[in-house]
Image (cartoon, rainbow, N blue to C red):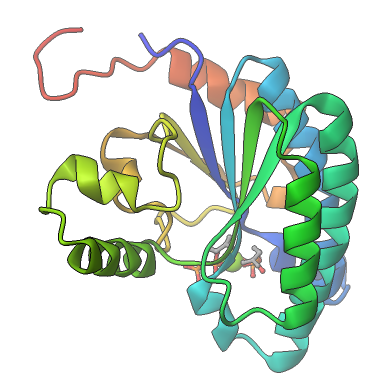
Length: 227
Ligand code: IPE
Ligand code: IPE
Ligand code: MG
């Protein structure tokens, strides 16, 4: 049976609808969502998870209205600072994964400073910003071509942003949509998928425990006929 996942990925969806239900602007939902990150990551680590990967901003999210993108970028910088301060105390290493070339110089500076502070942490919190699974594969393939290495599963894995980390065992998506939206496409090969209608700002510790219980009951066969 599943036990405790080593690596959980979360597609944090539903912030906009959470705000709209309260007759507030979408940015209000993003703020509430960002405040949920710390709590859920900490809870996962308390349960024994080693790696938590959170989808914060997809490469496709640039297509949103300029004002929303700006608000999200601002919020990302803010919450990285808060997360990093706690992470240092709690032995958590924060990585920001994704393309860096389209982020503002200001945000890149915050990312570099804040992640460096946490470099001694043992448990890993990956925050995906300007991330897309296909883009990540293109990046990995280009690195392989440049280095002249042969194309093997192992070599591809070495050039993914998640190099050296276990693949996600469990992928959770909040907000009711049943799709991956370009999240960890290669690494998700054998992940258990868990979808919930709960909107991200409402996804609390008890909801994470439900997902973990559900995961624990899954039989992971990896193509065989019994575990
Ligand atoms: C997820 O919430 C946050 C990001 C994608 C940045 P949404 O903003 O997608 O919220 P909904 O899906 O519109 O409710
Ligand atoms: C996925 O949510 C991206 C993040 C949670 C960062 P979206 O709201 O962007 O996904 P779609 O558009 O519904 O597929
Ligand atoms: Mg959404």
